[in-house]
Amino acid sequence: MRTTMNAIAAVLLILSVALAGCSQRPSGADGSAGSQSPASSPAHPESVDASSGGDQIRLTVYSTMNETKNQEMMKSIAADFMKENPNIQVDFQFPGSEYENILKVKMAANDLPDVFDTHGWAVIRYGQYLADLRDEAWVSQLTDTIKPVVTGEDGKVHALVLSEAKDGITYNADVLEKYGIQPPQTFEELMNAAEKIKTESKGEVSPFYMSGVDNYMIGQFLDQYATSLLISPEQNDAQSLLDGTFDWNKWTPLAKNLLELKNKGYLNKDVLTAKFSDMPQRFAQGKVAFVIGGPSFADDVCKVNPNVKIGYMPVTSMVAGDSPNFSGGERYTMGAWKDGKHLAEAKKLIAFFAKPENMSKIANATKLPAGLKNIESSHEFSSYYEQYANVRVFPYFDRVYLPNGMWDVMCKTGTALLAGGVTPEQFSQKMKSEYERLRNQ
Image (cartoon, rainbow, N blue to C red):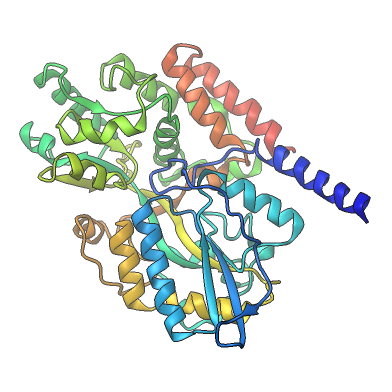
């Protein structure tokens, strides 16, 4: 028996090491990796005796939320649930940057948490492990933009979407007002705005901020504008990307646009050594105009300058005749493990989180639109989400059109481009070779 157990442990260790190399988009709201410790309790412990002497059910819930205030918000909703259901104990785990690796090992062992966050992969990655939630009362309220994302071809609903991602461009409204700039609609207008800001501020304001250390910021630009260049236009390359016939020379203009930001002085001069954590202070001081991605860093900006005005807009169009768009899909979700011993209770917990008052709490804490219709929210970005409610939302480019592992390739090669290590043409060839290699694995 000891030999068998040692063999199993060895297999799991090998799996965890191998899977750790599969890099994908970080799951935090800002794209950053979390700092929470990996969960130490089992994924689905047996029922334990309650203090009253009866059996108490314990549900383990895994979430990708990294911000402490958001974690406490989720725990507070769970505490309300436990008051109504004293026989159910809810244990939240926030593994942070280790989330994906832990879940991959648990999938290999078919021993998942009772409830877990699918963080953008409800159908593609976790689909076979999730219970079908199509008969739950809240399903009819899923937003029109998010329902297709978590619904399989057979009609199976894989998860409740607590927060819907709508990644666009966060901007310093004070800076734009100072230089008489309206939020741009096209990439050309965005570049004109960058030139105006750089010139009139005499280089004191960086039109854009990126980090070569936290290179997901560079990947974010490439991923969002890949949609504007290749997917959003009426004449697009979606099918060729899916069937493997895409001409990767079409990637070169996007690489050239990224390099142009640096060559024209539109990026922070320390782009290769700067960190994401340096950005909120500069933004608060009016030294940064645009940040590609969502406004999850707003609280950190307001700690430095509570009077700063932060604006939000869609990604500008890049092709003539096209219109702006958001990149998005699932941000935070709750799915139920189909083989869990307490599936009924897991569905009950998910239904509790789907209550309008709880969805409002989540929306206000995360500053993201809810995945259900008619959810009231009141935070500094609510008006922007309302203003752009009819703007198209496309799934993240890498999640649909690139094989697993390409996110890391895109981030690292984009950084190498800015460092002078590769040319735009070489970037395209790198994307082509890695796309073919990973697609055929």
